[in-house]
Length: 530
Image (cartoon, rainbow, N blue to C red; front, side, top):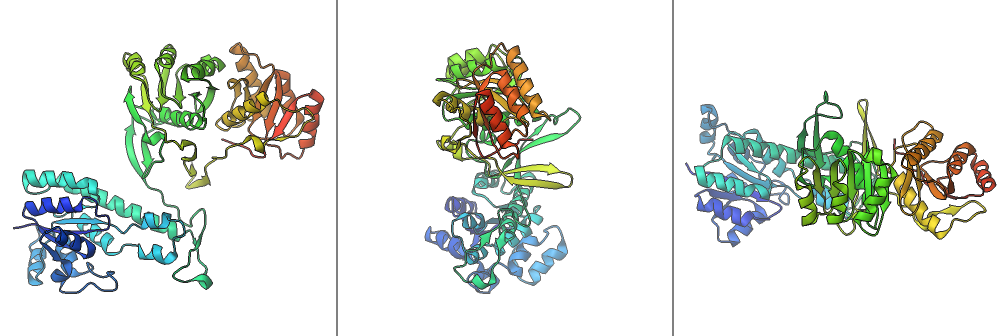
């Protein structure tokens, strides 16, 4: 018995060649609307669905496939005599392949100035209904919902004259996944609309809440992981449906062991930090905190400076560059134990250097030209039976944002170092204290309950690394609530301080800075990273 294929696609990419291949295999083509017109124009014999249903398309195409002759042909179980008898009684032919992609709802609502009417009109009804019917009856029907599935379908049809159970099931899963994504996008949009009845018209562009009444996220598994944060925990890595360019999820592992849960978490921290710099930079991460950050004329210089900050913590760390790794940088890095090395690219000489270090994970992540502005828009944090959702901390401090609040003025060199220190502090766990000089971290204090302790730890680490904190600048991710925090960093050697300001005791701290003869600037923004 000849197979029947129903084709009804919004996105016509590859559909003509696919239909030609089906026709060449003797498969009868059914279609609707614009798809049918396109196939007929290409000289393919195609039967309009309206001929099958004996019912015309109506309501501007809203009703064309919502018909028993379509859904009966999709849902009938071939192994059940009663089902087949019912089809025969009502003159319904089976549909063996369904090719459907949906109205472009996501693309429509992403456009600036999208009207409510246009959004609603691009909610597909018949398409998802057919997809669900076909996917439910996967044992008998192959449902194709994306152009990248065409080749696999044709290959099996040519080889065996039918689709394998395995492929039909995979296509069914992909179909239900697509419907889930589609419905989630519709829910996100509609539950964000701030409806104003008095403004209702065909031209009405509704205001939308930043956070919808129901929040739906969709992720695709990248890989299962050997274990989670600890060996008794299970874990997997997922990515966004459409990963941002230059993000960790777009990376390619060139060599090394499989990434672990902690590797991925730390690698993300390193990558997000290093790509925030416009000049050549190197970031070394340990336990999600930067333990060394520096800029330089080239990757080698940046790494050499970053490594000096805390060589002890750098052991077994994650290293990221925002420039391709060349021979000089690779030779320097290869002298230490590194878990993951990340960069936009690696020279042939660099790859050769690491070839013998088979356990070192090399990650290549292409950076777009505008990578500074292509970032995650939202951040999530799981809490008991719930989720915290916020806009991502993508704030970038400019020189013009700094407000000098002391008698002493920072020098141009100190201002540059302050901006550098502030950029680093943003990626250090709170409470964060970061000492810097000449585009290099000199001491990093992270994650303490007391800002004083963070400052003391930064000093201890600097001393251990044989680095002097004299004439350094320091960034504090949040304000000093008392003067004691300022006194600690000045005692350590800082001559210039950046902090958000905003404390009830700001004046006390300013007076202390003037008393100690140091410069201080307020940034007007804090960067808590708990």
